[in-house]
Amino acid sequence: MRYLFVFNLLFLFSTLGISQEIAVLQYGGGGDWYSNPTALPNLAKFCNEQIGTTLSEKTPTVTPNSIDLFDYPMVHMTGHGNVFFSDEDIENLRNYLLSGGFLHIDDNYGMDQYVRKEIAKLFPDKEMIELAGNHPIFNYHYPFPKGLPKIHEHDNGRPKAFGITYEGRLVLLYTIESDLGDGWENPEIHNDPQEVRLKALRMGANIVKYAFEN
Image 1 (cartoon, rainbow, N blue to C red):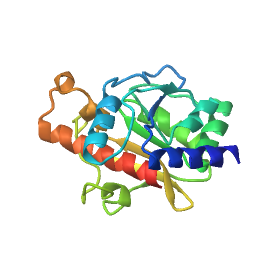
Image 2: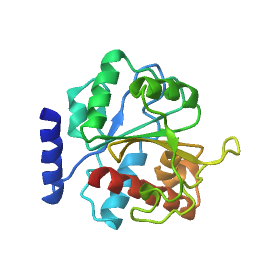
Image 3: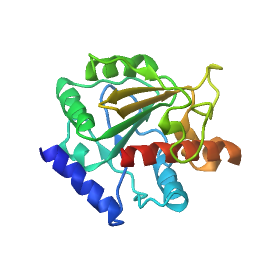
Image 4: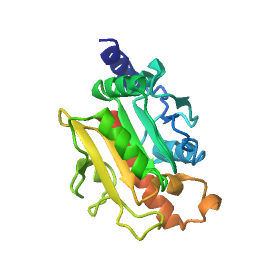
């Protein structure tokens, strides 16, 4: 009941134009959860300017086992290495997602083999399904009819987006072989062409809009 109250309150804040925050998930296991420090501030600025959100450009961090998790309609997770969720992390994170929260995991290259095991612990009765190009998240504001855009090349792999859905709502989005977060970073960090950064930011805006409105 408390969880539903928190999310109803957050929805009220959004309709009143009060700024909200997207948090970075500080997970265990030793992986660099702090990668891409300029990514979320840039995405928030883009969303505020282009799709009318009122996001704070601050980037708070939150741990999976914290009650503070429920303060954020959307949480972002990234990194290159190991990921580990404790039993307490799993219980709290699952409650967060099933109560209206949204988790975006963006593989910054190297976390795939680790994070899949933790997602399986999080939802042992569900399988991640690859999202087709006609999924609403690819067309929520900006159209991406072919699905997830390619931002950075690593293994010449096709960009893929996987999801877990609960009661018709996508609660967990896992993006791989794309590196959206790198595309959100300051332009001088990766020297991406403007058109590539724009693809990443527009896809990010779709994710934000979907997470906040569903």
